[in-house]
Amino acid sequence: MRISPFVSSFSQWLQSWAHLFTSSKKTARTDWSQVSFLCWHIWLSRNELYFHDKHWSPIDVIDKASKAFEEFSTVCSLSMENSNIKSVHFLSPKLSNTKLNADVAFSAEHRSGCVGFICKDINGSPLFVASRNILAFTVLMGEALVVQEGLQVAIENGITNLEVESDNADLISYLNGSVSYSPSSLHFVLEDILYLGKQCNASFKLISSRDAN
Image (cartoon, rainbow, N blue to C red):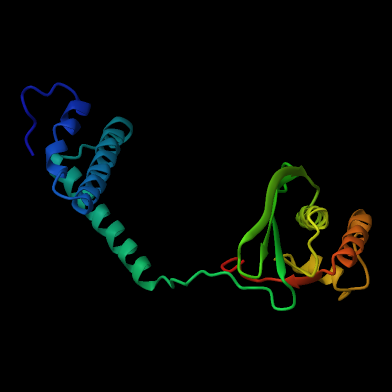
């Protein structure tokens, strides 16, 4: 591609390519991807010249950029072909009329996270949903606190026969009595969850996949 004599900067040079990408959205996406690789290799050639005194000719830059783009495109195509696309759908509760899903995103470094829960009826229609930031020392503590809060909201809304799902195996084991001990820091929270669970006739279930909440 030739640079117009009226183009005085690199940005203007790129802008002069705009007419090449108006044929279709799919073609434009591919063309702009190639442009990004070309710009990146122009920058790499500048670094090679500045730091290592190595000179890449324009042909070298274009060749390296083209090979990198082809490799990138091949990897993306293989990933799409090998991906297992699942149909995501709501699994209705089996033993009750309502389901409560609770989860936490936790940062051990900052001892904080975000908890969220959603309650749905047997048809998958939301009854209530909430999320907020919390301070917690462990992921387990965060998971326990969000279940506790979800049960409190369920009781406030008069919801009974509740199926509570969590992806934390330790928490579900404690609540279902599968283990005879629990961390001392969580003792009172777990006891309160069990008390609240009896009030709304809740059952506790481990869910291993987040695809169908």
